[in-house]
Amino acid sequence: MSRMSIPDIREKYENGENLTMLTAYDAPIARQVDNGGVDMILVGDSAGDNHLGYNDTIPVTVDEALSLTASVDRAVENAMVIADLPFLSYGSSMEESVKNAGRFMKEARADAVKLETAPSGKTSIKVIDRLTELGIPVMGHIGLTPQRMNQIGGGYVQGRGDEKSATIEALIETAEQIEEAGAFSLVLEAVTEETGKRVTEVVDIPTIGIGAGRHVDGQVLVITDVLGLSEESYRLSKQYADLNSVICDAVESYVDDVQEGVFPASENVFDAIDEEG
Ligand code: KIV
Image (tube, rainbow, N blue to C red; front, side, top):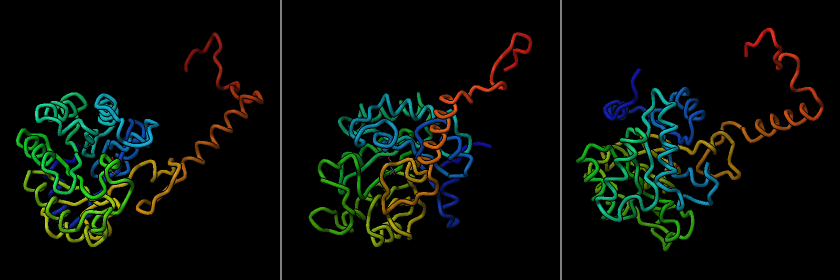
């Protein structure tokens, strides 16, 4: 079976099927996420705080993200693999933007890239236009855009039109420009449900929400939140397992076994006659 393609995503969208996306940052988790049947796997720059031990997404480098994307790519058979372009890897110049996005396709073998756009953000719209013209599929991302967190000042819900939040109209206009520039899909992060609904009504590309309510075309969550591997829980997310406890219990059992001399046992050791492992 080949991987989910842009026409496959389009077909599901046109048939009114809800699209599914989860993040993954390494091969073992990507394999399970793929086996679970998601349409798309995002190697998000949320790797910064969910995988690489940073406080946020800002320090993630192109080389780090390339390595994570390549490891996910090697494990995935069915889902589309989308690489998130790190902070300032696009936008400083067109040449640099194309070069970096191209590395995710050529070296890490991503199927598409994602990049964030500020409300009315002209530069990244031009980048989307150029990348799609060159054959690099692009997923847009508006609403709460974590790469702008130092400007926004916190994780404020967008679309409320107050001093911490863009207006619905600004977000709709930006979404339309992203569609016009050629993006095949659009992430809406932490926006009011009304914003999610209105943007979804206006654009003719699938909208994928995270904290964007019920009236979008698909959903995405961060895998560490879903699996219970995070330190915090968020209103926009849902935890489906408690791997922190599972892992902690497993490690404690291992430590006990070793300390008590229970592991290794006779079945774990080799003798001179039968060397099969
Ligand atoms: O980096 C990420 O995980 C994302 C999702 C929240 C959409 O951008």
